[in-house]
Image (cartoon, rainbow, N blue to C red):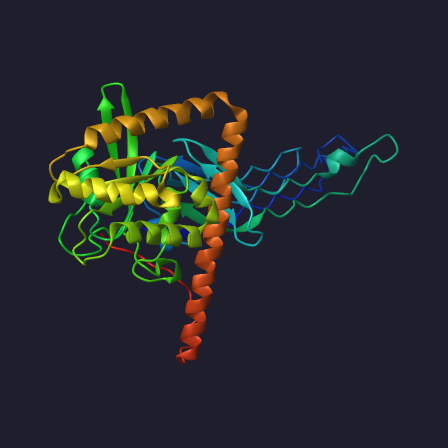
Length: 393
């Protein structure tokens, strides 16, 4: 199945039914009076979070969804049938954005959560509604109102407690395989991870957390190099990020320089990302002896931006150090969850931080899309430059 993490759709709520103009006509009952019924309400459009879905691929093939209108009223004070509401299932973790205004309508974070995205039109009134002691034969009715029409951007952001980021071949996929039951592809060439992967890490029988692995970043990712930065949005909600660093890169690069590069690419996507806790994980430590590792750790300690960050030695291949790392992560995540539940100010700050990362990231991606359109025009292409990228695992 294709992994599609965003889709653009149009939702149209149903129009309300019109009221009826009618008078009672029966034998032996002269001047029966008005008996026109009201119309029915138009159907509304809702999105519902379905934990059985993991991709937006279905919304790439059908992009317009309309709820049925309400029926008009009828004589004998019969009310028109209301249009049925339309429920569209989306994956848990979907953010819904109104494309015209840029407003975030809502986030679907829990299975079964329902979000109204287009309100159905109100019903019209029949002439019965307008009778009075002074107007016994009203001929006035009202039409139903139009339902809302909205252009929506649906963005899927994976729900995870820990996000892995690093250069290609840093060992992110190997690490998530070592600590969870996830089985992402692992190979000795760059970009073996093409789509985000999730793994559940069981620290003990009663405690676990979710870890997310995204495709690797390279220099210039914020400008579209490699797989770019479009998958960074999946880490927007994670309370802690792990910078996975190869202690002995095959290309001969310096691990410290690689860490600085990751920080720069992250900042170009969103400055708000730099507020998130970012831990350093030195991977493939089985390739160096203790003295070399100590010198490398000292270099990180002397670098101002990394001096006070938690730093861990691990080997995804042998499993060395992974238990200590997972235990520390579980403690941090437990504290984060407790604050979310008991501290309204902390919860509000986290929500605002997520919104800021989301907005800044969207602005960056839109800027890249605009640059691609301009490049197409300069190359003499006449297409509209629509950016719709699908990745196959």
